[in-house]
Image (tube, rainbow over all chains, first blue to last red; front, top):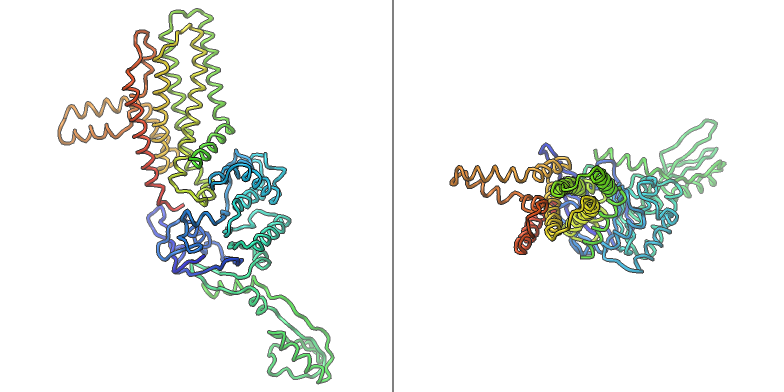
Length: 299
Length: 256
């Protein structure tokens, strides 16, 4: 999946034009799990709509599996979950999936079996004959997730995937998406839930005001954000290792490090210098703080 | 074709669950009760009046159902965002429009036929003899309703739901009057601007052509020639296709 210099522009009712996305270039490799992040109004949904062919790009191009985004051949290979959808209020989850399945070109016993399986997987087995209008927001989101999985798509494009789900639902969804990834499915999803992103993604793309402001491998980012500290009593030089020193009085000092190697070096120096080590801490950095910083930088 | 019928089935199911057809059933029941009451008090010999009344009531209710059912289809799809999962499937936007329009036509036809059955039972009270012209009336009305659905559908893609319904009602109920006015305007000035009235008359839907109600109510009228029915059928196909084309032109490039 790829976009090159993508621009999406909307015309408002008063005739003014709003640029929702501009000059956006991104690519997602097969089998990757990519989180698409950004504050409200950043252009996430517009980008996804463009990739699905709901909106024509004002400039640039978008493709999926080398095919024009939004083309019938591309859509055959994609499952899509919209940001918020009510689904047909007077149909049941089973009928909703049956409708989408038939529109997708599926039919017969294989479709019926797949619908039953999907409804069980998303936890709607018992509610499959209730009308959608009687379902909670979380249950409707499950209907949405089930419909996106119809036909075993190779790419899942999920817009605000965890919206409306309770913690149990989120955990089940994570499990489900991980299984799909193991089966070779590519996942591209937008979310505000950084915890979800952290647990699922290989890579993140951060967008702000329609432009890509950050593209990072999540493993290396987490490593970069990790904080290490050594607390000791005594006199030991940390010159060359860190300048972040906190003095608590009585020769009690805490030194903070950016890498594990520096921490280990500091531990060696403390031992050699005869200092008494009180605590060694390794803690995850805050992804949230990182994103807020990046957004503020971009603004 | 399968896609169209799957979409149409969805529309019909939704309408059934919404209890739209219940309104029809209740109206039909009321018509039967009223006719029964009139029959009880001895209004015999009023067959022509009863048939005329039945045709008027059928025309009125079926028009209301056609417009209300069709006008909300596409605006509701967009408002409820049910359009997205549909268009994410490997279908063309034209397929979606055809499927939805077919659904609206099926719902309207089902309602009309239900009303016809109720009306037929009510007419039995007046010992009305069934004649071939009545079957022709039903057939032409079905074609006219299909044209009305396609007009409302096209309007609903270019204006709001309420505006589309209002304009459709104006055309449906004022068709004969509008036609008469345009013909008179053309005749008073056959050249120049008057020619525009003639063209406009040709473009606007001619719902009056599909209404054989007056003819069916009259005791002395026989069935209309087959070529007339054939021509109406052709007109309905061409006009509905044109309306579908207009819907597609608007919807195909629309950002959603």
